[in-house]
Image 1 (cartoon, rainbow, N blue to C red):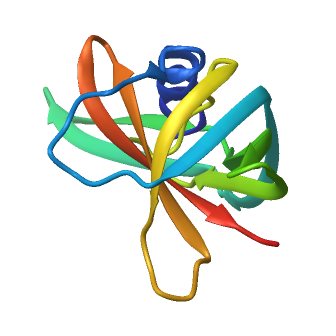
Image 2 (cartoon, rainbow, N blue to C red):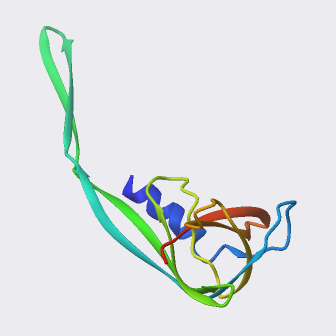
Length: 140
């Protein structure tokens, strides 16, 4: 899982750029100075051994395959950014392959509040040439 998630994050990092596309109403301005990624181990999948046995000419043959233990890693993206001119603690966490979390290149992005409590925003970006929204938590 770590290898697949690392590859996914590696493909996404730096790929999200400004977008003015989409039918949604974006009433916030997100000015990103830089993005950073921190990874941390949240668990461990133990090693596993699977064996199969077969009979070959009156002799029992056993073949075993051992999968080594693997760390389960989360990736958190931190934005050094202002939202409508106010510096905010903005981040997202990628916990699984395909998570909707990515770094943003420096620049100005259109954003909108996702909830009435103003604790999450959706940011309009282009990823791989296609419009996409990335969800971030706003902690202050």
